Length: 252
Image (cartoon, rainbow, N blue to C red; front, side, top):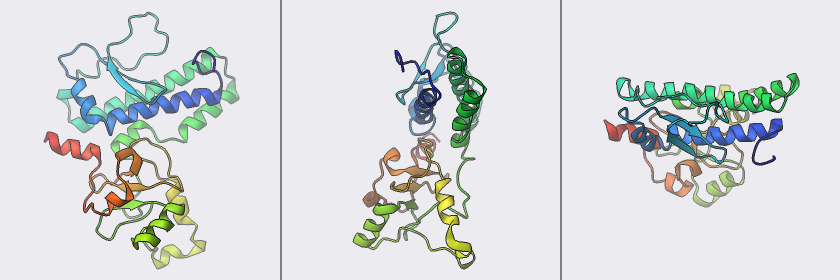
């Protein structure tokens, strides 16, 4: 990557994931701060995501034409005229569009061919959109959570060595037993369900060596590290609320 500018499909995808991670933070774990920065009385504001997984609300660049495609202008004006969840969903749609625009701008600038463009889109399309993460439409079915539930009702999951060591050391039930009709057919379905899970904070897929926890309000799953919850701490939580749900309640 010369001068920090992505030039290959893999580099453009890495740039996409970094910007996407920052924008997801703005609309989920950092939503309270993002909401406050988007006051309708301010000038036209844009939400920017950066390759280093950070975000910023700022005025649009003055350079014309801009170095990169610009995000949606004036996202703050509609904030108080809509339900918060609807406003965040609208911002999410525009951020998804902007991310695609930036990635394919790089593709056009550096002459990606048909196969390279197709491969880039397939890589991007394997990830849930920000809109899906913000609205919860990418979450697992309520009746088939990706993994474990604690005996006290707070749901979380881990696997691999972490699951084995936790269950052996503390006797905690780390994985809910399958029903009889679910355990038939070779038992491969559970693993597929887990592999399809995505974190509501960062959007990454379920990993085999990671601790997860489920919000009891919106029923989205999160990496423990993304919401700063450890397995030990989870044992003492009767009803877990993710940062987004906690912030919404605080503003009511």
